[in-house]
Image (tube, rainbow over all chains, first blue to last red; front, side, top):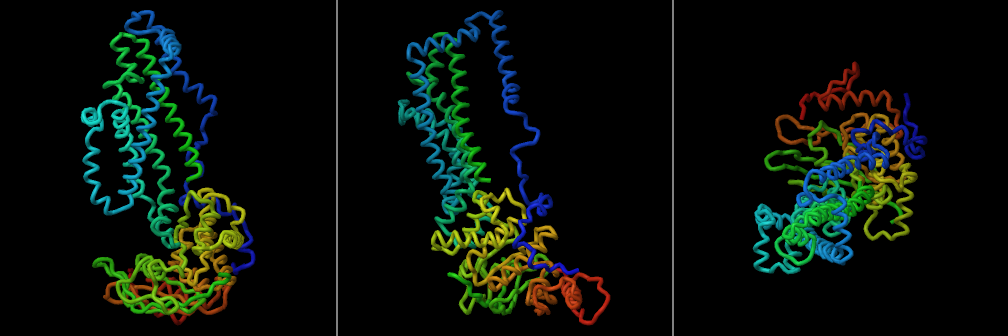
Length: 286
Length: 269
């Protein structure tokens, strides 16, 4: 009946095994992100490639029935790319577009972070600024474009500004929301151990929102590409958007297809870079 | 900062109301330095609120709580708290979480040694580098306890610390707490709704509850628990006391027998 065996209790026992399954309710499932039925990597890639390859084949077949001025063949699209590259134009168009996206994204994300942190953390800033900001957010961001064209012009600065606006709101919204919903229990625990103000922010609140910030950044990056094309379509002499309009005027469908594919590739590539960062962070963070 | 001095706590006329809802009234209680006091009461009766007034996480509407004669400040650093949930920072290792409890200004090397010591004491030495999601609930709760102890608190405040654990783990944690208290005899105030836990751990059990028609809970009884620790969980004198306390909580113990079960109130708070 006596269970009071002080010596053989918690102290010496790494009782890990005995603690196991009964904690299922309180513990997040350990392999949440890794379903046991997950397929091997190679197989996943192979399966994922089936549809694109089928589409490519269908495209190739279709060119036999559709005239080339309506639908260029895959080979001609590749040739168009090689041709542009050889003339040194492909690098210029891609380079300037990537530069605009990265600049606009960096500026927009930075402003979004600061604004989001301000509103997520300060009740005063929230009360004073939130209504205004949500009114601004209600305006479809592309509606600002003509105004920016008039004010700043569509030079480099104007384009970057347009992209920055596109990147700002996703970051702002996720950061402000995440900071407002940081687990109160954790914040209280931090306070109970003497953390206040900046140290509470640095040690509890900011780390707690890191995953949300990263997903906000990914959204913002996707938006940045969207706004890049919008800005370059409106007026430019370089860049992927220019390549689109230019090819449209000249009826170069091969280049049009090439540009669309390039946009997909670069959009996905930049997103993948952030995705790798996100995974690494989440592994560390949760 | 080598050893902890246990500090006494006193409650004088403590009351707390949230808006119009009165939770506590007229709480007078003295906790001697180094003793373990369990606050027992039906759920929702204000146990945790009372406890939060000790650590300064909440301030009473009336009356005052003082530690060693001086009033409790906002988030009083003479206290250390362990909550019902472990509340570990998920992005930090167990070790780094425990280190969060160290008093501010602790130098790196002594701090590291202190953390290692506590991990050893709580049986977590092997889990030092793991993250909270990689350990069981019992281990997380031990880490939470270690974090509170790192503070070398004058008063250790435990809010249903073992409430969310399974029965077996709970028993082990109770023994661990007694080990810790034997090694570092600080003042411990813990809230529990588990009568047996109170009887095994505490020097005094404080029964909190409403009295008559008055709104808000107050101290209904303070019971000294007989016997030195570690106590036999089945000792006869505890059996009677358990029935008595359960009756005080409005739960019939179905315990045929003796004498002292004289707490007549049957209200549920």
